[in-house]
Length: 161
Image 1 (cartoon, rainbow, N blue to C red):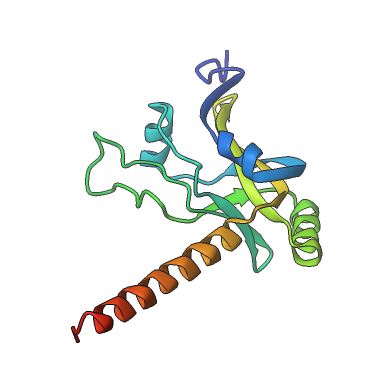
Image 2: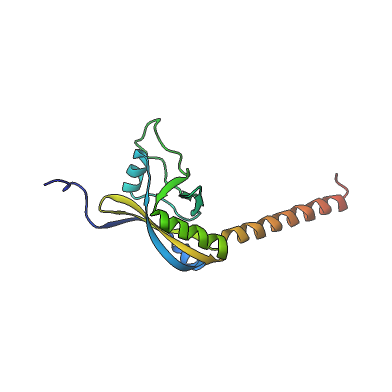
């Protein structure tokens, strides 16, 4: 009875519910995820956050960034970096297709869910458009800068500095 210890079916670890609000999903893919031992244990304990996650193609490989997998509590010094970039496994053709569509149409690749399928970690990624976090971040930065300027002006007006 080989391989009976592996569990069957899907066990969802994390979902990115916000993604469906922030983005218009055009296409979804299932990708494998390359993980370290402590990451797998942490995920099996059911902990991860996809909120700030995104994927990008770099030198023909697909990488998942910004996904938070907390350190494994019983881990030792071998523990992983919670937000390190992790390699995603997809067929080369799919990666090329993703890469082309991101380049030409300004789409983003976001993780929708992270789960175990027959014992292997998988990520459902979406090719999405919409309010890109990049735009939000820019708007936020501009707001911050303006506030800083106002503050500086205000202080000068009050005779400080």
